[in-house]
Image 1 (cartoon, one colour):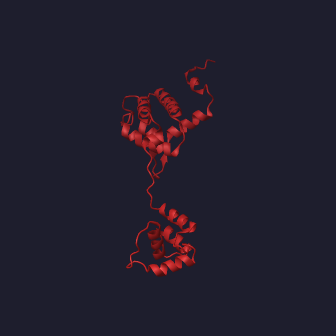
Image 2: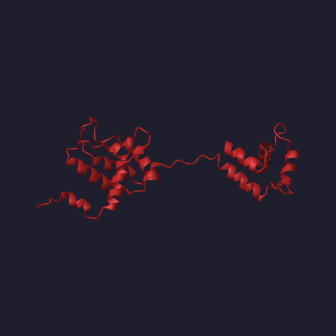
Image 3: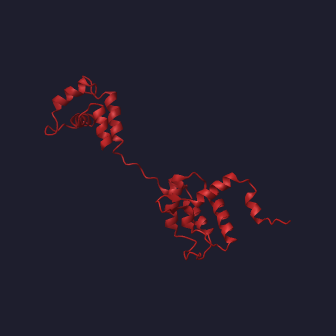
Length: 197
């Protein structure tokens, strides 16, 4: 609200003048109890907001559009918009990469799909990775922890994001996606090779 009043002050426009401009633009009658239309029209003409034919100038049309943008609700992106057409299939595939068992923490490795959808909405709003990269990074993570009998492994939900004590989120998934980008193409296969001396 402060921003709107600051714009009015900067343009030397009173709230009553804005009200009259709004009425003129939308072909509404000015309520005499709210504004003195004769006085406001005189002021608007002298400041270049309306012309002699009582038409809004380009200056006022641009200003009204700018102010109108403050009142429009931004359309919330759907899961499909953020994560692609087959996001539900990809989330299920992601979850299935985790073992179907309890971890040492006492939590199940696989998490409820709705919780994962919420986590992935956050992930796709903050990072720019493809599902292919996400699934490859997850396979790498699960494989590494399978060799350690899943000790200290994160659940499928906490792998996407986990809130720290400072209320910020961290993402091991993003870290693993980054690692894939830095590694060579055969790095993933090196896990299976034994080094014999």
